[in-house]
Image 1 (tube, helix red, strand yellow):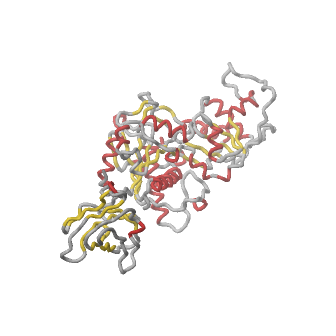
Image 2: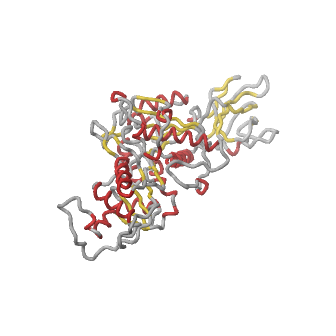
Image 3: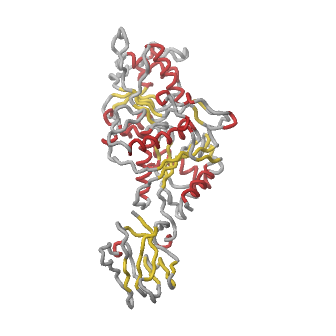
Length: 480
């Protein structure tokens, strides 16, 4: 892993000189017995490098104990006088060349979007300044950063472009985790016939995730118009010509709240009660267990431009659960619940943080994660839940189950290791959370995550806004 080294003369009576490299940029300047700089190198053990001075230039050699040669890490001409020993300094981490005095972070950031960066389409006042603290003079991120949103109505690339315009910095789609992003791990459903509910380019989103055979609620409504009877103005008993053919449905995938709740609620329950085959005669009793259901985004409420929180997909799921229970007498069972606060979403986010770190040239593992959000019941609860999962995972030699992901085996994934050792939840007061309105009830959390321990809804840190949150994290990490 990266380590900082300081340079001191070997032996007494030696005098320091000047070491140059990286196209002539002075990286180390030694005067007497002191040093004013550092050099970032990679090495496995705490060995000293010896640099032997010579008249014009020199090639460094490794010490007798077999430490790697500096030639692997140093490019360009070198001139020095004297003999030096380079020792790792655990208190400082630095980059190369002119950035030699800067630290390389061992922490990553996970940002919620609605209520933290924007309210609806209005960017919050301190957000641009906050994100300028995360980039260097070339606009490149200094800290591994991803965005974890429960929105599910856009492609990741479109969300990245939207954020880039809002914040005036370049954000790549690989930094975006939508509510549906973890569904790419559920490859056992990729070739099943899946019925999709939600808004936006739902079929394109599904295909990008890997699902090849999809049907939408609107497809079902067009093929069976007599099933949609609430809106009398568009009620029809005659299907269009030619009549659309709806294959037997194998699973339901709920991306987000639909536009017409009554239509989606009716048709989704119809499909469940018919076992996926709407062309067959109604069964004498609905099949149970029912078809697999993959659901994204459990936010009961979210914050837009309105002064009060608005209903989210969690409210729609609550209606679906209650109606199915009332009609059939059975509980609605989710095969997967992804998006915040599920552990699998934070697991997926951690893998993306580690990938972003590599793209920034950071070779050591990111061992600390900070999740910044405005909702105690999703952002704060979710990160704290993941913290508990990480602790259980590290303390067990067996597979540890995740809430909301029944039967999901992490060992089947390419990224098998959890690198995070410390997980912090950071609450900002610019969105759903409002202390003046009193504490929200624990029942605001999704049904499958109840009961909730009170400590899991307590943030590690609290800030007025995202800018204050970044300053607080930097102080805690001694980073600037």
